[in-house]
Image 1: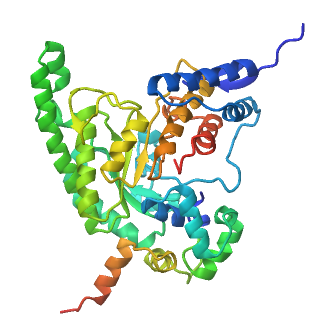
Image 2: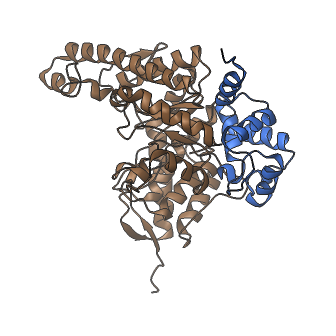
Image 3: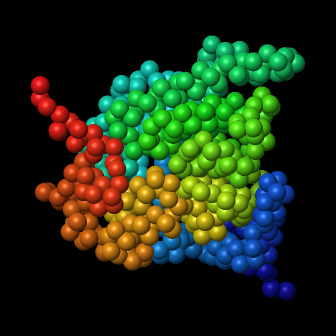
Length: 356
Length: 96
């Protein structure tokens, strides 16, 4: 009996595996069904499944969108990929930020770029606001592409030992629910003030936009701080705000926080979208987490099922996060181009994303 | 989409105005007088960007760069670019 031919592909941790076409098809269908079950969103249509099967059974190393279907790239992590030691897989090239941004514009042909501090959270970056603003100011003179300023609200840094507020992670295991909630409610206000303050510094140097990254990394309080900050900046300035999430579901560390009457804990991407739009954001970047025990085909199918539900309802551009461990991309430091190109193309062709 | 190699920066600016991708592409294509396919064609756009003097990806002395290019982009797309407005304010402000 002739052996069934197999396709070389990868798992969610980037390990190389061989799978049959039937295995891949099954994974794609099951990945989509997994998203549909969690998020209560539609599964992929048959033609969309066929596209993903064709993609994952192709021996081509690199996959791309059709000509004319290209989408826009926004960036998080600033120039960390070039300038840092391993942040964003940074290579610590002997370049300063200004040179690095110009390389992203010309050599890498990015559509937009971002200035941000290497320690990419609002709490450490705010002390260097003048330095940050100066870099943005200088770059606005010499670059053509839209230039954002970006940082993470990162509410976790406001809790002890890094910050002044009691840590809910310490209080919750002790059963101190009320105290944990009170700490989060106080900390989120401090975070919101800092996010607004740092955003305003960049208005003075004429940033083209602000990127709030890894939003809700510390759960629903982090999300609420960001939504309130976005609302204030969007309603009082003309600075476009991009909100990029940290995870696919908002963790209910507090559990009872609401924005516009909607409880934040447990929200999936298509539900997060509604609040982000209400807060006045210009671009939304949903996240779908990669499951390292499943194939990339499963993960990409799951990711585009979630994103398709977002883009179907969106009134603002949707730029899903497609990077290490999110958007169907494997969770590893040096992400393989064969899977990144597939996940990216799927997001645009099936997920109908406006960018990445 | 190729950034300043093509029209990625221009389409991105329209997305900052909350336009979804198809609308943003159509807007830019109309303003440039090109087809949607041409928007991401680096061969077409390298020449057109030089003709319009809105910033090109290769290093050509004398062509508009930075704020110069963005001022022309703002006029071409009929949009407001904050750093351009800031430059105009500073240029127009009296010395004393």
